[in-house]
Length: 177
Length: 183
Image (tube, rainbow over all chains, first blue to last red; front, side):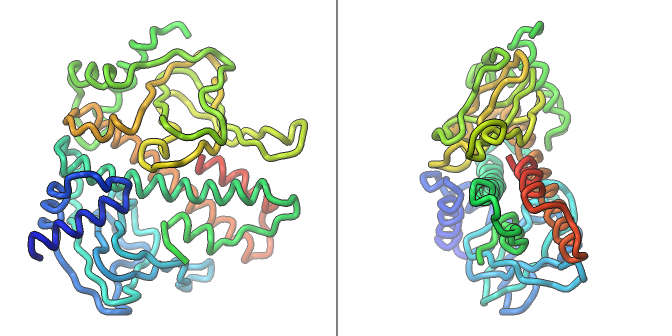
């Protein structure tokens, strides 16, 4: 990817995570260390239950987010639209993927391997600070959205309907429906 | 609270070092720099630290004591104020003020006992000044958020399985439990 493209993608990622005024150079340099994949519609990015650890950035396109229902069948709970971080939770917690992701449109994804992700996350320098802020903003937004949704349900009429599981899961995974 | 708030803050920040990604002890100078940027405050028992609905402009890293998070659910009497979570020393609360913009408090924070907290503002995380103590704090917040998301995910799946099996707890009780996990 060219330097102007990396800079443009870095700017979009930063702006999507409340860092619109930040210098894109550190994140652009980090994106340059990632492996790049162009994914055709329907092809997987990762599967629920796989080992996590690496962090992917969806730079172009859209991915469908799927979750196994109680009978073990995949159910689409929403989509991520570029620019977005994919798999950040597994990278931080070192846990298995909590959802599956398939390209919902031709997509461009770059992936930071687990070992480099851990090194960058521990780095006090500007690239580490930007990556941490992006993940913190993404996690905080997820929790803020689901908390607000729950508050709305709780402060609604006493006979409010049973919570919509798909909606809760979409909010929790940062997916749009 | 018998311990000096600064001493409590130093002890709590120092404990973050070996658990953060750096896995190393923090230097006194790093801790001092963080304390200079976010000095600890004392909170009397019963004092309200933040009120639901107010603009969220700061978060709190509790270094001593205990806080209660409550929400107003409408109506009068006991129904009007429900505890959704208790925050022990060592935890950060109100993170949306740091990493999102324009948000409002979703819960009221009240000290259950004499407490002390570092007041964290968004600018601290945008300063660009490299500080391992701040990295350790960010790592601590990130891990806490990730665990809350994972726990909430597990809780939703539990409700989903219970519903699929035709059982489960009442919707409202389940929501309150979930709210406690996300607040």
